[in-house]
Image (cartoon, rainbow, N blue to C red):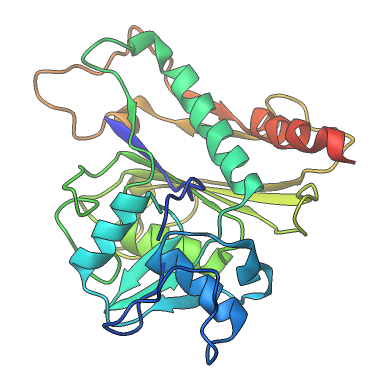
Length: 287
């Protein structure tokens, strides 16, 4: 029993893009024939360095970070440098769809905290729910498990898009996570991007469940809502809720484990008032 959070982890050690068999020497000296910003962008792949000199705010996503990369090499770098939720590998290309951002991390953290608080009564039992963090590293292939380390498919996926487009994150959820025999529920959040340091203004939320599938590739959102993130905080607790049924949360349970219906409420309720409040409070002293 597990959840996945599409977290663009911002703690990078050292490493970013290989477009040929050669690598760039990591020094302050920028090669004469390479534009400064391209050199520093390449450091994310070659050295894992997310440099401020790369001018990522001027990049149009999706951005091709590397070409001619094997899946094994891609997975090795993603795991070694903990770059989850930002890159995807497709047919030898490494593509950036999401850049690390504070609103993204705050939102992911708040949703995860809400869910883990709700299931805390089963902590330490054989029905405990675990957060897998960000495990997805593959695209364009159909592995039996959700990443290169044979991590199991989670029952619930949480995807937060900030710089990533709505179209891409929804396509990823519907055509990757929610394919048959993969994840059971998915929560998608799109935060409209703003200049660095500003408070986000608007958030949209979707909840999908495979139980609502109409055809193999078509199913409606079980819940869908949007709200502003600027003060005054007029939204009250209970206004925007997502319900997760225990049968969904514990889908595919091992035969020796019972759904803890006498311990956990059914459904598990996620109140997005507290997600909104977390984002508002983190930016409160900056305005």
